[in-house]
Amino acid sequence: MSTKIAPSILSADFSNLADELKKVKEAGAEYIHIDVMDGTFVPEITIGAPVVKSLRKVSDIIFDVHLMVEHPETQIKSFADAGADIITFHVETAKHPHRIIQQIHELGCKAGVALNPGTSLSMVEELIEDADMILIMTVNPGYAGQKFIDSMLGKIHMLYHMIEEMETECDIQVDGGINAETSVLVREAGANILVAGSAIYGAADVAQAIKDIRGKEIHHHHHHHED
Image (tube, rainbow, N blue to C red; front, side, top):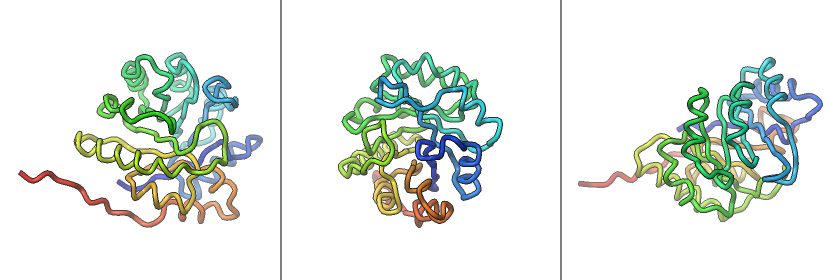
């Protein structure tokens, strides 16, 4: 799977979002990662559906909406209506995660399931077949600019093998502390969608930063079971 880059709106200039979206799209990004925080699941509050709706009018980039909110099932419809392409909710917030995935699909969006660093992969094992994407948080969510947690590499690799053994299609997204250096590590572990904030929006040359994070293609050795 080719690597896709999702610059995080969290590191963009909030007074100038239309231009910030245009800038990363022209620089080669496939997605924009929209961090929705409710002040309860995570300490900060960022932006809601009305902002996403107004951005949809000025950009055709893929809107990758990451709901860091309690009770995501109450928010899905408003973000789908606002123009989200992908909606990701946190498994820690969901009593009925299957139902939420169905709800997202019924509204015509792709469904992602996110896990915090302290959350076990066993929480999403039963959801991989239905989800379009699993998001492994490589920092504890809530703030931009945190340092990558190295112990998440094993988790990414385990997830990669789980997906492979199920013989299903499911993207692996990583979010937190991603830059040109950590990108190589997460891509080797099996991630194919990379969220990066300050490494992109803080760069003098955004296109070069995206290119550096995308890196060279990594070929994974598939383990095929011999008969």
